[in-house]
Length: 197
Image (tube, rainbow, N blue to C red; front, side, top):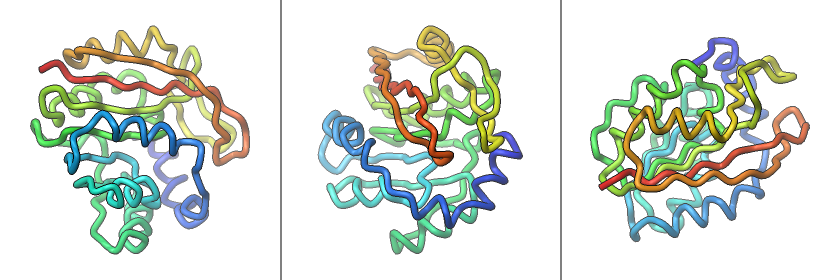
């Protein structure tokens, strides 16, 4: 991960953890509906653990992780359970999870490394497992107003990147808008991919 971006989350973990995210509730609900009851879910970039708490409350077996040790510590306290510090490139699970939830975190992976990270996610999924990720839409990488790196993909670029990373039986991309930590509206791409069986 980009070092300046990681330092942003390490330095702003407390402030970030106080934010509430209601807009993604419907997407999380739709994703969970694709999975069997009690499914194993790997969460990347769990932040303060809000989505983790919701998944646990619905009876799913969740492995929450975050790249920032400070954020993982906050999530551990919030969830009253251990949260791993895990950088995307260190993911080494093999066919271990029914789903991978990566909300607004893989958007920070350098463009030339995203296929490698998606390949690790593909490997971590069981056959026919589902993978959700969201990205800020654009046509080339850059930094936002908080100096965080974003890969700013287009839908076509994402489709090509996912295809390079593994074999999927389906891949859908929806668009929408969210208000970011910088209080600015951002156009987002929401990707749901199903690993081929």
